[in-house]
Each structure stands twice: as structure tokens, then as C-alpha cells.
Length: 146
Image (cartoon, one colour):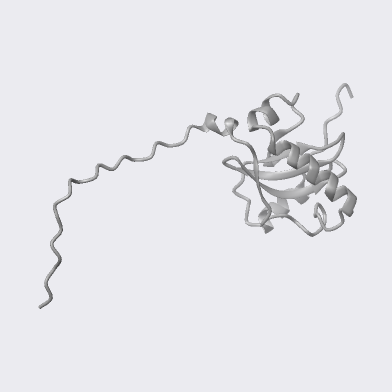
């Protein structure tokens, strides 16, 4: 019968549960990107984006990386914001279903120009990038005073 090695008695380690992260702490983080859900099909896919436009988009997203989510969302005059899924067009809602993301409550719109947008789903401080919307079709702006 093999002998068990002798182990000196060590005091029990007191385990502390990790505190749930403060939702407000999200605003102090810089954005990160995930591209596994990035669409490459119509109607909002990245497959038709010209190389020079890709470089322009890359530069704008890289600029966002130098900011916190507070700077991006709270100080942007509402240019970048969450949009309830019920407010996006039917085609985008259908794509969420196909992608297995129908449980998302909202998508985030990042404004890159007057009409160009990048859309994704926020997961903590990470944006899971979905769509390129060069013509503001996913959530068209309602015209004021009409």
C-alpha cells in the first residue's frame, strides 16, 4: 500500500466572492471590438465596402479606442447611441434572428459621417460588430417638423 506524503496543515483560505461589476464602470472602459458576427451578406454586409473606405472606417474605429465609452456615448451630442431592436428596420431584425442574436434588446449605432453608421451589440465594454450601414437605412432618422 503506497504511503501518502505528509502535508503540513495549512490554514483554510478564506474565499471572497467577486463583487458584481458596477454597471456604471462600463463608461470608464475603452471600447474593444469583436468581429465574429460581422456580416458579409446583403443587406448590411461589409463585403461591398471598397478598400479605401475600409481604411477610413478603421481609422475612425481606432480613434474611438483612444476614448472611454463615456466620452463616446455621453459627450457625443447623441451621435452614437443605443437603439431598441423594435426601432430598427425589419431586415435588420430578421438578420438578428438568423445570427441567433434575437435576444438582444438594443443595438449600438456609431456615427461615422452624416449618414454612415457601424452597428453592433454591446457585451460589457466590447462591441460585437455586425453591420455597415452607409445610407442610414437600419434606423432611418425621423424628419423633424414634418
